[in-house]
Image (cartoon, rainbow, N blue to C red):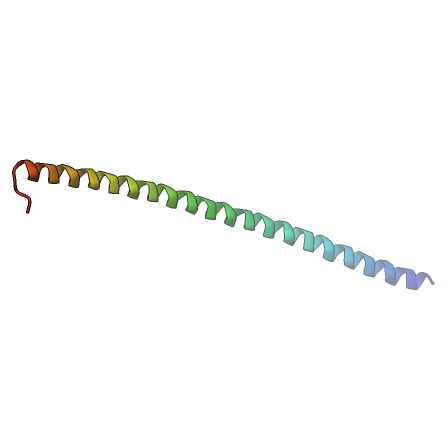
Length: 79
């Protein structure tokens, strides 16, 4: 009977060791996933900054166009 108990105890210890390894692996996976999510968030933030700059540049170009058109009208250069 003691032999059966020892075999069962060995199996339980192996199961516990596998569970510990699985928990450690899961913790590493979660850490890496968190890093990936942070990277994606940074990319999104950077893209929004770039888009803001593009819009700002468009407004500047529009203002320059308006000034050029006004100058052309004053000098009667427009078609």
